Length: 198
Image (tube, rainbow, N blue to C red):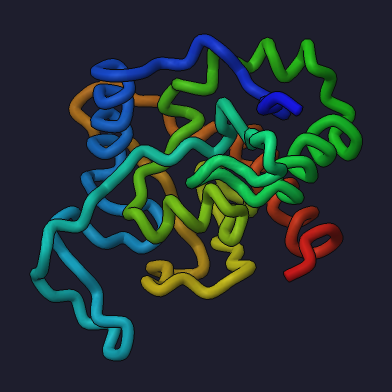
């Protein structure tokens, strides 16, 4: 058996363009984690929730809808840093069966994968939780306002139950696209409520 890429959108940005994209998103969110609200260079004490200076917190650009949702190797295990095999298969199932999205439709999204509207800024803890579908954002009645949905507790708590995205950059940078946010949330909901078995 050869390695199988279960679903991949080609044509994504790499290298310096990827770094510029992440930098745009960090600036859009005032160099703070979109979920925890903690700025770069600060840490939060889990027990007291007190913010204190510590080792520089790494702030990353987090894709809501990712280019590659999973890769299986010959031995049946997933690539390091990717979803477990069952979740990689399930994400593709959710996108195609539950959403009714065709390969062609998903392929047409490749131009928007590496766009600020598909990213939020977050620390490493939040990045891992979003990638593993352990945290998601749910729409509210207000534009650019989302409810934080936790399927597993974060080691660093969210800044509140409701978060609002605003552009704090000195240029126009697109805010998170509600469709990307919704697709991620529905996949997370399906995996955590109906499919995933721990």
